[in-house]
Length: 174
Image (cartoon, rainbow, N blue to C red; front, side, top):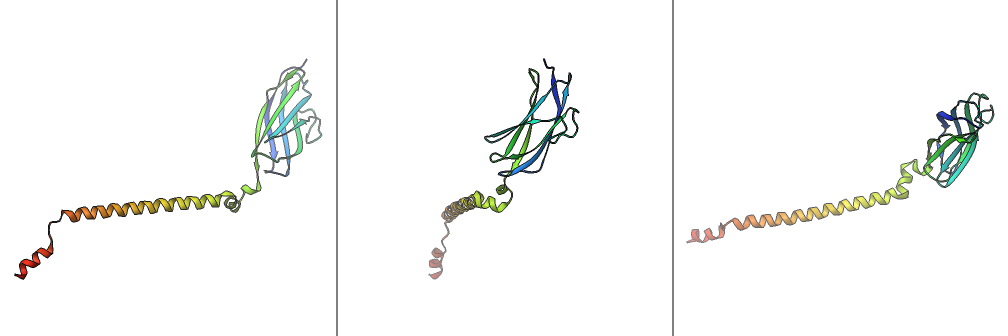
C-alpha cells in the first residue's frame, strides 16, 4: 500500500514550440513522497486533438541528472500539428493512490503568425480594404447629408428677407 505524495513545482524548459516541427522539451518536477514508495510519475501533453504521454524518471537517465533525489525529469521531443497552446499534465502513482494533477501550458507559435505580410495576405488586407471602403461610404453620406441641411438652412434664411433690391430701382427711375 502506498502513501501520499505531492509535487512542489513543475518546470518546463523549452524553446519556442513551433507548429509542424519536432520541438525539444525538458520537464522536471519535484516530488515530496513521504514514505518513499512512489515508483511512477507521468506527463501528458495535449495539443489540439493530439495527446502524448511519457513517464518521468528519477534514475539518472533520460534527462534526469541525479538518481533518487526526488526530482523526476524527462527530456524528449514533441511534434505538434494542431492548436495554439499545449496543455501539460503531471501526476504520480503511489501504490493505489494517484496524486493531484499538476498543470502547465506551452504556447505554440506558427510561422504564419510571425509577420505582418502573412497577416495581410491571409485576411488582413481584405479586412483593411473593407474598413476603408466602409469609412469612405460613411464619410460621403455624412457630407451629402450636411450639404442638404446647409441648402435647407440657406433657403430658410433667404425666405426671411423681405427686401428685394429690384423694387427700389423702379422708385429711383421715376
